[in-house]
Amino acid sequence: MFTGEISGPIESLIDLPDYDAVKVFCYENSVNFNYTKDFFQYGIVTKFELIHEQIIPLIPELEHIEPVEPIPNILILAIDSVSYLNFERHFPLTGQFVRNHSFFELKGYNSVGANTWPNMIPFFTGLFPQELVKEENRGKIFFDNWPIIWKKFGAKGFRTLFTEEMAPYGLFTYEKKGFRYRPVDYYLRPFTRSIQTDKYSQFCYKGKLESEVRFLNQ
Image (tube, rainbow, N blue to C red):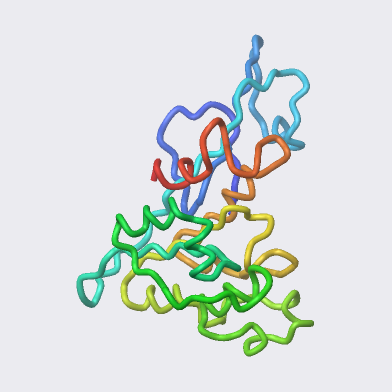
């Protein structure tokens, strides 16, 4: 969802309507230069040295929704393909963390498939994938109309967010078409895809964990 382009020095506040993030390039030059679109046309500058590049997540301004009743903040942490007993054996520190922060545990949770898709679709919708789409068609459709749990939260006045730790292998996007429209209020996939390039590792950006970049500064 990077759209639009601003070239040259920014001398005052600018309006970035409905932007999820901005990508900033800084070049060093020693001669006068007329900043034009051609300067950024191919993303390559030969006469001027690139000295800094950074992608900065933004917080889109959204219309305030007055909830029907006081509501808590809810974080759903999903680790797929792991049963509750498997979680107990292999994630002792994570288990200790969530219990110290009064998370609600699904103690009867079982893995129902071999990978992300067959496990997370029931978790998010209450239905098996084959109840929603035929296997041969899942790479041909958008998922905007699916009964995903964040829609129920949104209808009750929650602001919703969805993010994944490895965007190239996203639940709704790996070998699939994803969403035609932004599915939640804060959709971090465009930002995550932009920072997960060959220049950076899968889990860090500019010396920080992705989680720090995406959440702690927000």
